[in-house]
Each structure stands twice: as C-alpha cells, then as structure tokens.
Length: 311
Image 1 (cartoon, rainbow, N blue to C red):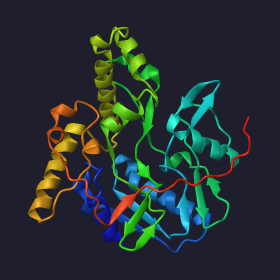
Image 2 (image 1 turned 90 degrees about the vertical axis):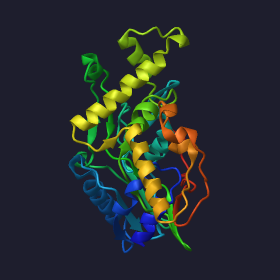
Image 3 (image 1 turned 60 degrees about the vertical axis):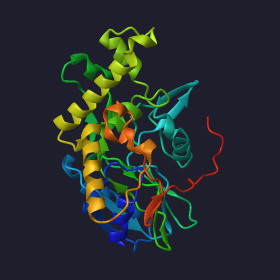
C-alpha cells in the first residue's frame, strides 16, 4: 500500500516535484475508527512532516470510512463581510460550514481553520489545531524594509487532505499527503491572484510604480518582488521551499530517470508550466502526454453540510 502511494505520486501528471516520489514516508492508520483518534493521527502527520521546517514528504492513509472535509490540513478561513472578502476567498463556503458546526470566527486575514472529520454517516466533528502544530512564515524582503509592514504570511507545509488515492480496485477517501511549496504557488497565486489575497496593487504602490497604466508592467514588477519575499523569508526561517527554475531542473532529472527506467513520461502542461516567467523554463516549449496512469490521486466531491441560515 505504501509503495502504491509512492507510485501514485510518480503518476501525478500535475506535480512538478515528482523527482522525490520514492522518498515519500507512509503512515498506515487504517485501524482507526474514532474521530478524535483520526485527529491525533493528523497532528502526528503535521508534526512529522513539518519537522521544524525541514519538510518531509509524508502520507497518512485511513480506512475508507474516514473522510476529512478540509482541502488542506492547514488552510486559512475566508469571510464575506458587507460585500468584501476577508481572508482566503477559496475557503468561504467551507468556513461557513465550520461556523454552522459551532466554530467561532475571528474575521482575520489569516485565521487557521479547524479540522472537520467524519466517520461513515456520523455527523462530522470539528477540532481546533493547536498553535504549536502550525508553522507559519512571516514575509519580509531583502531590499524593502516596508514589506514587513504589510504583515503577510503563509503556512509552511501544503498538506492536501481532500483527494482520494486509488490503488488498483481500492479507493482511499482519506489519505492526506504533502511535499513542500514551490515559491510561485504562494507568491504568484495564493497571495497574488486578484480573487485570492490580491497583494500586487499594494506592493506596487509601496514600490512607487505607476498602477494606472498596464503598459508600465507594474503587475510584473510587483510579482517579482512578492516572489523574492516568499523565497527569502522561507529560507531565512529555515523552511523547505523551491524556486520554479530549480523545480523545472528537478523535473528534467525526473524525466531522465524515468526514461532510463523504460517508463513513458506523462504530464499536464498547464500545471507543469510555472505561473511566473513560464517562457524562461524548458517545459514551456514541450507538449506532454496527459494520459492518466494507476495508481493515482483524484479529486472527489466535497461533503456538504446542510447549513442553517447564517447571520
């Protein structure tokens, strides 16, 4: 089963970090049948994988009766308040469900959501993560002192928890796994996208750029600055991260090893091409076969709690 989990990573067409597929550490928790025991196992996963910042690729596999409602084990809440969004817009609906289950929101930009765990058809139970298990990185910039004033941060480890893992005829609905971040995931998407944290305008303003004209390329300049801050801050904090140029070089090495092993390369071009300066990377110019192989990870319909009317 653990080897199957490794193969599922190797077969993941959207992942540029597959060079390290064989280093995945597997934890078997299929014997657990209680929500609190699942929560304790997830805390063990978080602590082991975080490893003080020296992140270890890890997967914990539960029985098919277990379902984790969270998209990631650590994720920020999102709120709609008077027509404006506070926090992460992608978490708005799940945040509403947490509130319906009894969670008390703080309405901050970076509120860590509780874990919601369900066993079979039982009502889901909610657990707050202890602060000691949440490693976050406050962002600063090597050249701009004002960057710290923005009070931006992000969590250290991306731990996907809502995808299923398929190994042959067996489907695991709860198999949270993690690697480490590629810098652009945070700096060119999470904090930069207009529908997410939309930080580029304020960064451009602080840089003194002309934001009234697209041709000034203020978005591009602000994007580089934000990504520099992400990489600088994570490395300063001793947290594992990779820049997109290095990630592409690692993927090329993965391709070489796969070819030497006699295996055909599959990949999803839209995901393998970095969201920043894509034309400077070799993957931009090459097509990929997006054939899906087994074992693999897959998206699954999100559980939905019938919500009462919320204020």
